[in-house]
Length: 118
Length: 107
Image 1 (cartoon, rainbow over the protein chains, first blue to last red):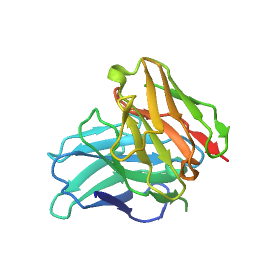
Image 2 (cartoon, chains in turn orange, cyan; image 1 turned 45 degrees about the vertical axis):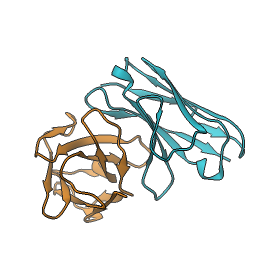
Image 3 (cartoon, each protein chain N blue to C red; image 1 turned 60 degrees about the horizontal axis):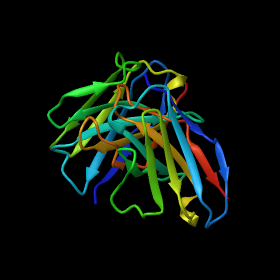
Image 4 (cartoon, chains in turn green, red; image 1 turned 90 degrees about the vertical axis):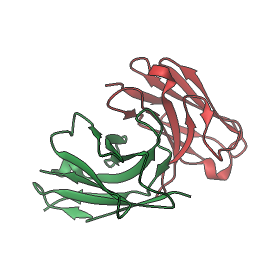
């Protein structure tokens, strides 16, 4: 059974970089598409982007200028970096897996709350 | 981008009752690339339906999805205690992918 687990700081200061890692267990990160989604308090989920195991990426245009998703196949992990954060970036961040760019999100992590505050 | 609007916002029902949840898209969802998820607090969201009407692996047949174009429906034929949660629709045919605002099914 594939499991995903997000990890990283729960508090980030404004203007700094939010960094999260998703560790994949029960399966290889090679093949499949690996996504990040976030959900601000009281709002709908927002798709951030995905990375394919080959390294190709696709980002939400609303975040594209600030986002980088990368992966480390040796550790079976992929990561999210979001720079120049503001309070509007406060959210629960989820990692997830899809089979193709046009697939539903079959496996999700439990999510991790990141608060942007000084 | 495609905006998904779910209704109702909250559905108050009892175990054993039928739940009907709606998801309406601002433009046609290509190839019915529409999914439904159940989300309980503190847990990972769980995929229920993909391709508008296909049940995901291990999902019981009390869950069914229907619809195409701009109107989609998730039906839970008989609510079990574990079904009281928030449900989200998600379109993954257009870029960016987008989600509905959720329907809470409560006792």
